[in-house]
Amino acid sequence: MNWSWLPEFAPQLLQGLGVTLLVFSVSVCAGFIVAVPLALAQIRGTWLIAKLAGGFCSTLRGTPLLMQLFLFYYGIGSLIASAPAVREGLPWLVRLDAIWYVLAAFSLNFAAHEAEVLRAALLGVPRGEIEAAESYGLSPLQVVRHVWLPSAILRVYPVLANDVIAQLKTTPVIFTVPVVDVMAVVNRVMQDRLLVYEPLIFIGVIYLILSFLILQFFAMVGRRGPQRWLA
Amino acid sequence: MLSWLSSVLQGYQWLLLDGLWQTLLISVLAYLIGSAIGFCLALANGTGVRSISIAIKTYTYLFRALPELILIMLLYYASDDLFGWVFKLFGFGQVQLNGTTAAIIVLAFVSAAFACEIFSAAIKAVPIGMVEDAISLGMGPMLRLRRIIFPIMLPLALPGLANLWLMVVRGSSLVSVVGVMELALAAEQGAGATKAYFAFYLAGMALYLVVALFTLQLFYKAEQHLRRGQLAI
Image (cartoon, rainbow over all chains, first blue to last red; front, side, top):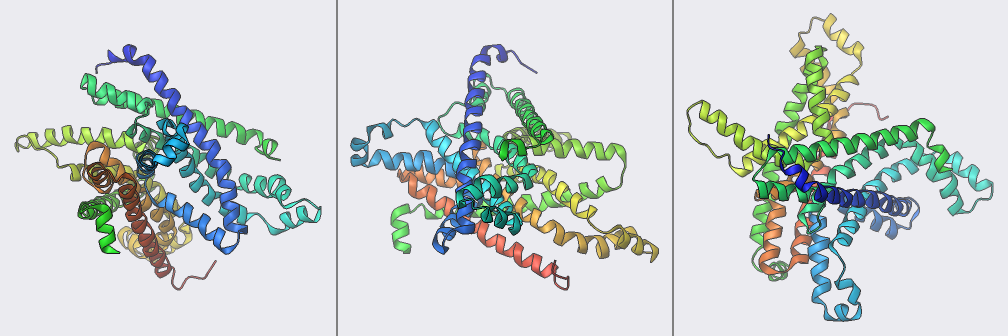
């Protein structure tokens, strides 16, 4: 076992870890926010809107994240670069860093997965609960915000924890586009030092620690009662 | 339609279809081998021998907690070393494992951990009274497995197995990172050669989606077939 590379690459590894955690936390938060209207659209939307939202979710759930990332970064990126009107009209778009495409791809992917979970959860809430809220004169938005959504989230809380861990496990894919996450640094070590097992074991341990911490967080919130943050 | 497609993909559509074939080959074999290993592990877990169940728990925990991409890279390089060593031991000289074979082995080991959990849960859901009835009728363990446990457990395990299948198909795209030729790498190469990035990645995604939707229908039909004669819940 050769660990002599570790001190030298430590600053880069820390920086990469920061990028990984950034993509992870932003995509979980943004994805969840997008997932709520996506789920509601499938339940309460008109036929066309429901079909569109459902099709969007199954497309993102049925295809690999790797392909979605490539479609966003190389596909849409090259489309923007190839259209002169867009390039000149919106100069800031061209200089859009790779990280933005990564954030968009990961957020939408998580949103599609969560929308499916939320849809089932929202349908599982007893009708009486919603009717009671409506009869109190709450507006449709208030019903969703204060009754329907909290009740649904409570029902699928354990599934939610699993999905967040699953999202963490997808993050090493970031290194396939030019964004330097912790996996990209590990890959660089593998190529520079001609090592295979040590860097991969190192990053494996890092991911084990991260998923353990996230599980602890969810367990802690679960013990104190997630209701407190929801209602 | 077809001529329009070939004008967009500039003759690289065969590369994509070949990639699709490789993806299907890798996914199907990895899924079948992984499910078989997972089922055996679930049965071994059910025997209640402490050391076996600790070993299996460690295996399933590690393989479910670690990112697939890291497992795939680790196992891919490890399988090369390991199989080279095994073949050398038996005097075959240096044998290089072909990339597709390595990918199948790697994905099979990853999916076995998930399959083990699915089968364990489904076997636990078989009413214990039925198993006791079978024992009291003098059925041997193999007959019991075939006639009682398997038919009751399978429809319960199917939704999880369908999810696992989709996971394997999506996970198979990750072996492109170590250079195994399949659909994701085919799309990448086509895109790089023609500069039609958007068209190629969209076409690749469409193929993955068609596979997913079609096979989900098959799983749905299979579940309906297995549940025939059962009361609707």
